[in-house]
Image (cartoon, rainbow, N blue to C red):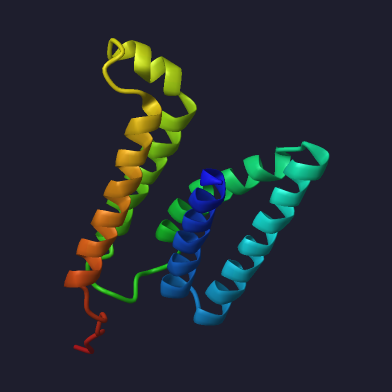
Length: 142
């Protein structure tokens, strides 16, 4: 069940970025598409015992979010917070994958899974701070 919540939040983050950087209609269709794929992935996992769609859906935000940040200009101020949030997001994914290795490297003090959740919490905190400071960018003609 936790996997569903994590994937819904990652899909929402990606869709929000598409709405912000590309277009509102594209972002909403991205959200609906990703949530539909999550439903299909859940069915495939339960019925066919096949996790390949989950793996692909885990990789999509990891690749698409940094790509969108570099390809499309921001419409709002304080967009540099997206880069910091993306860094924590990718770090969280890495820590989740390297759970046992992280746990053994830090001498069994804290697991990679726990650090993964802390990094995901940082993503939320960073984006909340970004939203509290931001304004619409106004281009000035000189």
